[in-house]
Image 1 (cartoon, helix red, strand yellow):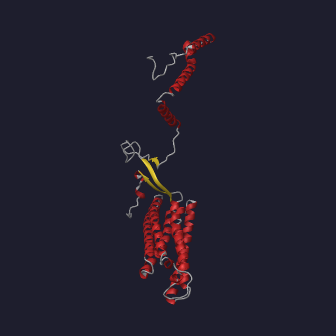
Image 2 (cartoon, helix red, strand yellow):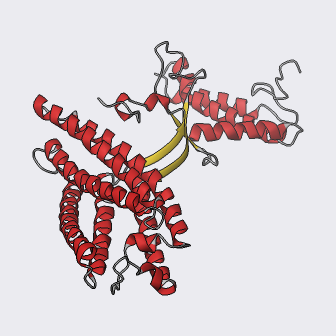
Image 3 (spheres, one colour):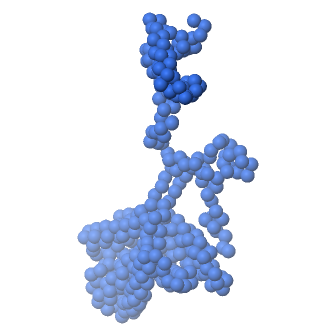
Length: 382
C-alpha cells in the first residue's frame, strides 16, 4: 500500500482482482522473438518491445483516471486539465471588453514595457472611428441643416427672408437670411458648433501629414519653401474656421456691419487656403500624384477652387448691382452664387476622404510610447 501515489496503482503492482497475465504474455513474446531472431541482443529486444509496454501502461493509467474522475474534487482537477488543454491547442475565447494589444515597446532597463511597471503594458483601445466617417459627418451636418433651414424659412417665413434695404423683387434668399431668422438660427448654430470640432482636428492632421511628406524631399530649398507653406496653409485654415464661427454667431440682423466684415474675412481666407494648398501639393509632389487617391484628390481640389473663383466673381458683381443699383433679382443671383461658393468650399474640404482613405481616429490607453514629435498638436510654429 505504500507504493500507491494519489490513489493510483503503478503498472508493476497488480490491481485488486487482476493478474499479471499481461506481464507473462510479454515474457513469452520476448522468448519466442529471441528464438526467431537469435542475432538480436537481449537489450535490443527489450527496446524493441518497449513501446508496446508503454502503450499498455498508458491504457491502465487511463482506466484508473476514469475511476478517480467520479470521486469528490475531481471536477476541479478536470477543469484545470481542460484549461491546460485549451492553452496547448491555442484555443482562446473572444474578448468581451475593450480591445487590448501588447505595445511591444520595452524600456532601457529591460524590466518591462516603457512607462509600465508590470510584465506587459497593453494598449487598450476605447474608441476607433474611421477618418472617412468623420469627414462625411462634417459634410452632411451643415449641408443637411442648411437644406432644412432653406425649406422651412421659404415656406413659413417668406417675407422675413426676402426683405432687403432696396425692397425689390427676389426669389432666392441668402444664407445669412435663412439662418438669421428664428428658430432656424438656433438649429444652424448647433450644427456649426458640432461641425467646428472635427474641422480643427482635420487641420491638425493635415499639418502633420504635410510635415511627413516634407521628410521625403531631397532638395533643401524645396524643403524650406514647403515648411513655410505648411505654416501658411495651417493658419489660413484656422482663421477660416474661426471666421465661419463669427459669421454664424453674429447674424446680419443683429449686427450687419460686423457680420459683413467677418464674411469678407471668411471668403478671403477660404480662397487663399485653397490656392495655398494647391501650391503646397505642387511642392510636396514634384513628380505628380503617386496614387489614384492622390490624383483624384488633386483633380477635385482644382475643380472646386476654379468653381469658387468663378462664383466669387459673380457674387461680387451681383452684390454691387444690388447695393448701388437696386436691380430686380440681383440679390437672388447674389444668393445663388453664395450657395455655389458654400458648396464648393464644403467639397474642397471633403477631399480629406481621398487624402486619408484608411486612417482612423483612435482613443486608447497606454499609447504614450507611440507619440512622436512630428505628431504633436502643439501651437509651436517651426
